[in-house]
Structures are given as C-alpha cells and as structure tokens.
Image 1 (cartoon, rainbow, N blue to C red):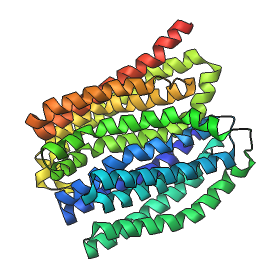
Image 2: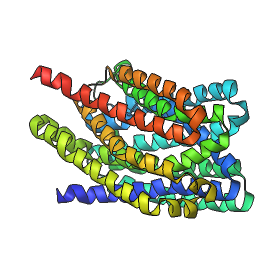
Image 3: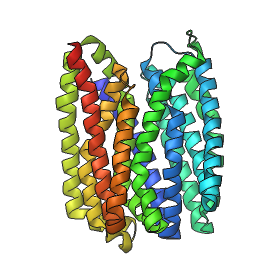
Length: 400
C-alpha cells in the first residue's frame, strides 16, 4: 500500500503540473487577449474534445487492464485513429466553423499529440512503472507553458503561440516515445489480437466518451448560439474547476486500474464495498472542501486569476462546485464498468441524458444565460452518475 501511494504521489504531481499548465494558458489568454479570444479557444476545445475522445477509445486503459495485447496492432490502430480524427475535424470545421477553422485545427493537433502520449505511457503503466512517464510529463508541461507564455506575451497572437506549442510537443515526443517504449518493454507484447476485434472492443468506449463530452459541452454551444462567444469563454473559465477534477480523476483511475483489476478478480464483495461506500465518501469529502473554499474565497480567486468581469459570476462557480462529488464518483464507476466489461448499453444511457441536456439547454439558457448553463450541467452530471450506478449494480444483483 505504501508503494502504491508513493507511485500515486508522483502521478498526482505530474498531472497537477499538467492541469495547472492548462489553467495558466486559459488565464494568460484571458488577461492578455481578453474574453472573446478565450471564447474562441474554449469553443475550439469544446468542438475537438468529443472527436479526440471518440478516436482515443480509452486505448490506454485497455492496454493497462487487458492481458491480451499486441504492440504492433495497437500502434497501427493508434496511428490510423489519429489521422481519422484530424480529417473528420477538418471537415466539420470547414462546414460549420469556417471563422474558427485555424484555431480548431491547431487545438485538434495538440489533442492528437496528447492521445499519442497516453499511448506511450500505457506500457510502463501496465508494469506499474509510473515514475518515468510522470517525470516526462512534468518536464513537457513546464517547458510548454514557458514557451507559450513567452510567445503570447511578446506577440499577443494566440495562433502563433499554439503553433510553437505544437512544434515543441512534436519534437519532445520523439524522445518520449523511445524512452517509454523501452521502459515498458512495449515490443514484447505479441499476442494474437486482430485489428477488427480491437476496434469492436474499443469503439463503444470511444462512443461513450464522445457522447459524454459532447453532452457536457451542449450548454457552451447554446450560449454561443443565443448570446455570444465571449460568454462561452466566461463559462469555460468558471467550469475549469470541473475540468481540473476530471483530469485528476482520469489520472488517479488510470493509476489505480491495475490494483482495482486485481481486487475485482480476487474479492468482488470487498471491491463493491470500496466502490459503493468508501470511494463515494471520499468524493463527498473532496466536494465539501471545494464548496467551503469557494464560499469563502471564490470571488477573490476569480478576480486574481481572471478579471472582474468573470468574478461577477461567482455564484456560477459555487453551483459548479456542488457538481464535483458526482463528477468524481462518475469517473470511479467508469473504471468499475470497464473492469466488469459492461459498456454495451452505456451509449444508450448517454444518448438519453444528452437529449435531456439538449432540451434543458433550450429551456433554461435563453432566459438565464450562464446561470442556466450551470444548472443544465449540474443535472447532466447527476443523471450520468445515476445511470452508471444503476448499470453497474442491477446486472450484478441479477447474476447473484
């Protein structure tokens, strides 16, 4: 257990660094370029996120948790899905977002580079080696932020700043790939896995993640339609607390996955006890801490990090803080469903919650703006948690 928490602390440090880097980029854009360009950047993130997750297909989690993998098939699979995601993104941008074509393209390239990094990390993570990939992530995040800060400060040009980020990340990945492949003995995995079966296994996971992310971004699209792209930027800045929690939970779940897999196989009763009681209590405790901090310091934090205009929406931040426990628990049940192999009906549940989110967005956002968007997101996160708990528990009780 001591070794586990030692590894987790390294992973947390790396991903806190990475998350803070992304937050700093949002802050820099707000302070140097203003809310409108922040809106363009965050809308580009909202458009590209579902696509990148669709083609990511949780391949890293699959490689870490599965006993039957083939490096060469997986590598070809990742290359093909990366190319497809870029092509489809370009088509969507040309048809629906011509004015934002360049920034959408740049953001999508960065996302593709990120999912390729996840692929490299899977192999040492499978061997429970987290230090190597964590150190590389810290180095990459810090240098990337420094370059972005220097370029955007002196040029006040978001596009040029993103291009420099892309060039650095692309160069860095040559070293990252070779180092992590060697650390994870990647070339030793030669099991008999067909490309077709890998695609069939992972596609539902990609669809689930894509629908989930698209649904979570529906309020942003509605704000852009009914109000302005500037309000999209303001909402995104306020939502970053959820983004940070999601990024950290993704990391923690990936770190614990090999241990969760072992516990699930050996003692399902104990696994379910940890899942339904202890982990949910931890989620509630984390949410309570954030709620207290935001109640006391929320407005001051928004003024310091962003600007006075965004701090006027401090109550929206408070609403989003209440969502944190359900967001954390949702990630926990995602991992449990992956271990159980219960992914078949997840797209159906997400389609239902997506439709509800869409309808609520049309009802609440036109009259209430950013506040309406916050309420819609709260309902969306709660619905998804309820569906995941039901999907995990009901079939299990029947089988028993």
